[in-house]
Length: 321
Image (cartoon, rainbow, N blue to C red; front, side, top):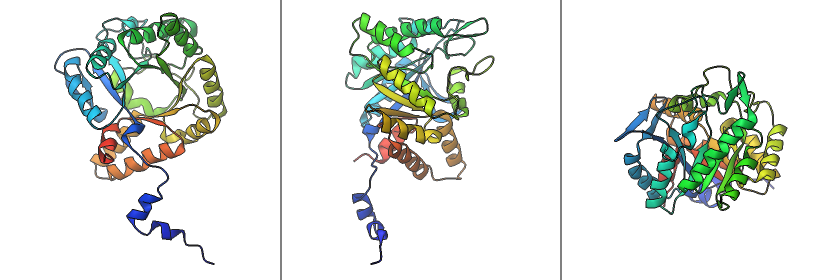
């Protein structure tokens, strides 16, 4: 007997019926950049189609996100002032803190996640506190815990530490619990690689390191077993969701996380992935919808339960009922 798998590919109806990986708006978390100031909706040069929003221009964006069926946003803040210790990251009236209060007051149904890091708040651009020209892990963790607490006090549903300091999940869980924020969950950037794909984001938030690089705290792209170890530690310390970042070049890590851990796995399709596709599309070299769909489908097929992507609104619109 001849085998004919093509019988199940012969038209779009049957292909849809047997499709194994289906995208929908529930898969996506939409990143949003908050900036100090008034009446600002400014396109980010390194990320065409992405914008900085001042607080008074934020509601329209959140309305649009919700209307597309997207259930969560990930907030990044850009401060007016930076210092050596990233003090504005935990300011009560910082951009992120005010944005959280605004969103949760007007849109209580949407999940508000906040990025917890220091890179865009420090004058040197590193994700921690500098002592003797190197990152002091434990001092950095103390500050990061304060940042997470400030976000929880503002009303964040979930905090997402992206710094890759040792022990930060434990410190954040402890400070949240101590202050009666036991219901605030943690989505840990468990396997955040020292990737070249972050360039456009660093331009968007002015967070490029002023010296050195981040290879002493972000992971070596060559390592896979180490990612499993990092994830195990994060779960032991109290993480609720594990994240892999970037996504496209690390689908094997997404797959390993899903096979090894019985918790939700998030994948962050980062700025470099976005900007490569977007600029190639604008130049007419590729079909944006087809390439984005194929890429995001691959990330979900690899095992991601949640996908953080700058294409969230586009994809949700394409596949909405």
